[in-house]
Length: 529
Image 1 (tube, one colour):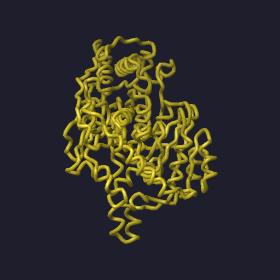
Image 2 (cartoon, rainbow, N blue to C red):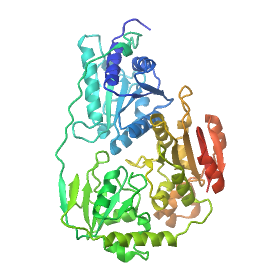
Image 3 (cartoon, rainbow, N blue to C red):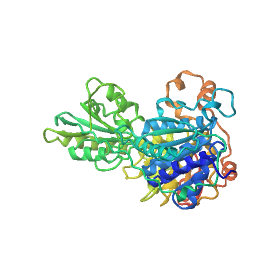
Image 4 (cartoon, rainbow, N blue to C red):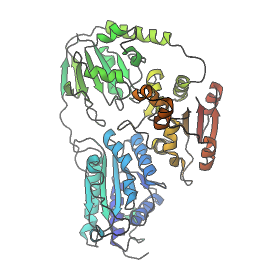
């Protein structure tokens, strides 16, 4: 390691500026080309100026950083070396793009003269994420010029502003593709001893748009992922039924209609009530229920979309008559409409009593019951999130889920990232066995970090039962359906937990489930369904 390195000077000033601006959470996957960035991050972490988390592979790293940003609302900084390391971030970058999560990607690269000539670990990293990043800065390799320090500081300020949506755009990922020449690192300057002066961009606050709606039209509020309290407040202000998905942050309050999925099924006894809906107001990104989506395509139903600062505008039917920020009505709303939905919801609950045994409904209800106060709940993109959409009670639980693209990627890593930021209480992740196995590598936790209270609760039904309700399950023979879609697995989750140093609990009844949900530390809960 040399005493002088333009790469180290640039990296130290860039990371010191990010830290000076208040960015706290940094995520590193070790590599050679990114060593200057790693050293600067280590110096800042040793001085207590940032939180630095190290992971083995970049795919897991990306989702861990995404989870931290979801929980904190602040940008996570991701540091990788060149080549496939960058490509492995792509699933997390796509999710961050579609769900408005701020990430700053520091992707180390070869200098320009080594690109396109077959150099080791070199590919075209510029534009690798296409339009999934708010901006891609291709930064030439520093050569030691004095002005490069100021350029590094300015780059940090621009990255923060873009990631947080200061320009009025949706928050999301930003890529700083940083070329470095040898010598790749040095011990000086110490990033922790720098105090660069930077000025963040001004926040552009566009004028909100309002809609004045007729109070006479029977209206329901649909709250998808990322909807938040605004959906609850609107529904309760005007006496409208609230159809809230479990990851909406809005599944609580007096107006929540929990059985809405079945109530909207026009083959059910409540067909007359559902057919009276004249307007839907959409918050967030609702993607779980086909019946709710069908409402938006119904030509007899008006669609009004409320802008989401993170999820964007959800108008899948392209029928929205208004896309607005605020809503009011022209007269008093008839609360008999809400009363009718409450009555139907009560009838639905009464006609569908719990079995008293351990099934998916009981698993959902028990997990919700156990999650209190400072606890967090992460839902994987498996059958259980749809079961939660039917059976999760009305309760103000902090729920997270990667619903931007609704993939099963990185669910364990996302939960781990959330637990790094929110250390009070317990983080629970409820997922299926295939979703767990897809991200099993994220069970590897840095042993130098504090032990998290993290429960990975697996609804283990031996494969992808989520597909059983779709078209191909009715047309394919059983053997073909099992091989092509259900993909049954026989992984011993006890051995998996042991291999990664997790506690393990096998659950076959409700009493065992209660006991497992009360555990602390890292535990894999294998619920046999």
